[in-house]
Amino acid sequence: MQTERTGNQLALTWALDDIPAGSVIYQSHSLQPSASKKQLLTVTKENKLLLVTEDLPVFFTIQKPDGTSDVIGERIIPLKGCFNFRDLGGYTNTAGKTVKWGQLYRSSLLTNLTSADKNALENMGIKWICDLRSTSEIAAKPTPSIPATENRHIPIGTAKNEPEESQKMDFPDDHRVYEPLMGESYRVFVRSKDGFREILEDIIDRAELPFLFHCTAGKDRTGVLGALLLKLLDVPEETILADYELTNQYADAILGEMAGLVEAFSGSKQEIKLENFRPMAEAKPAYLEIAFDEMKKEYGSVDAYLEKGIGITATKKAKFQSMMLEG
Image (cartoon, rainbow, N blue to C red; front, side, top):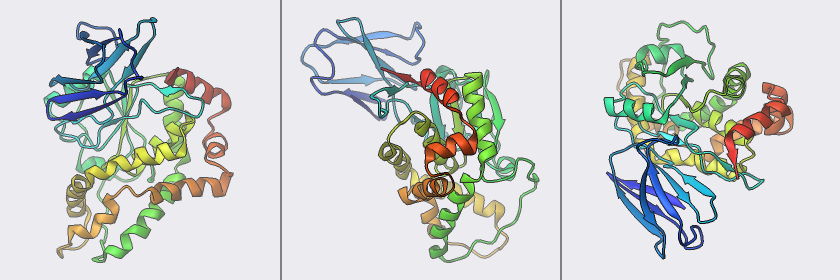
């Protein structure tokens, strides 16, 4: 089963053997039972449902004749003021269990959220947001207040006590330097073990879900944290890499966001060609694999990095899986 949205039209499609005849499909904009839940269709021989709705997000519940039910959500949630907003639910792990929808969200920065976007986040019931950016990035583009949602700053790749004032940087006018720089950035992220430990322990110990985490583009720092969360759930590495690559559809939007950062942090007045930064706007699997390789080099495996490097014990991992997996 999969969903695909075009404008205000949301399609749910499935293989004929995915949903048995007599099943009933419901729609709601929340995982919690509410007045928003509507019956859409009793399945006979159909394998597609087209829904016209402005609601974000939409969850479909498939109630089967045997009394069991499945839920499917939207992977990509097209907010107006925030790109690359995604749900990490729906992936199948090595034991055949499924990651719950509507619990783990990832995105780019939230500075330009509209009123409708904020309403959508309220519908999602997000308990807290983790901002992975540096202090200077936050000062340049702060996150707006969202009702009933706590915003915490736990940076990845920089110190938590970094000065607020923007540090001026030089940006070479040579596109060839940026791909190696990206690789080095991912090695730096891996060394942010204290930050990852604080985030993961907050999620597991406090059981505060749903949870949203983001950086500027929702690609690099967000990509590594997303990979670690899915790894804790025993999602296969190829699935994790495929999820990471979904960011590539937003490469142009990321380039546009980088233009503002270059202007804010550039130590030079000379004009810089934005296209030079294309390697930094792309989600190349090789970047994430560099992070994995760094973890394996020091600890032997990504699992060992999570357990010995970050401190997520087998007991904590089991608790997280009980919170996040079904089936």
